[in-house]
Image 1: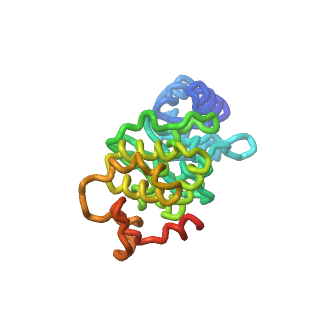
Image 2: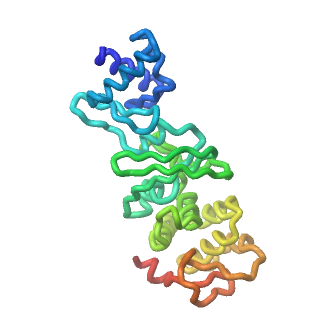
Image 3: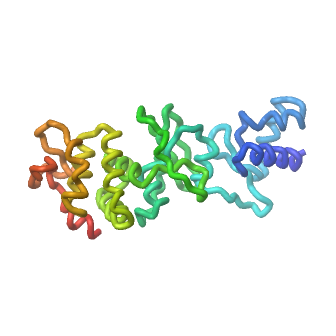
Length: 263
């Protein structure tokens, strides 16, 4: 019975285009057909878990264990399987995915329209962040994963705008350096992200950084996005209160940008 149940679950997951990931709410009917009742189906799943044939991911979701005792799924595979669209993996893990950071980020931030509970997998923690911004159109097209990964520019903008999401300013600056080196038009797409975020402080920080890294012409698209406030915006949010103020961008240089770009 256990092997038959395992095969049925594997088939249901494969047909649902999430191979290796069982969602009880969607896949239980196949087991009920086999064992005769919902209660028995849940009992079979519990038995498979005790036997080590399935491993819990979060409530109602399991990863199938292969014959060798392994699970060939990473955290992005699981995010794709258990998170309803639209959603967007952003910040550090997206920077890492695009090769814009040499750091490994254990916290995976996923933007969603409805708040969901966090869960962990093999030391990685998936945190869902509710947003009112549209999540459509900001995911890259890639065959490397089924997960919806933010574009490089969206990941950079989110990382800079939300320092509590775990990407140090030095890594954000390095990501911008790398993105500009790859494609100078990345600055224009960063400006679009700042406009869509409707954040004057984000536009100021991005404009300031781009102007120092790539020149005033590359930073020109950010100028209309600075806002009217005369109050200065700290380059490092939550950093020291001191530092000179750049009069064009109204950014207080409370961090050494040259040093950050060489980090």
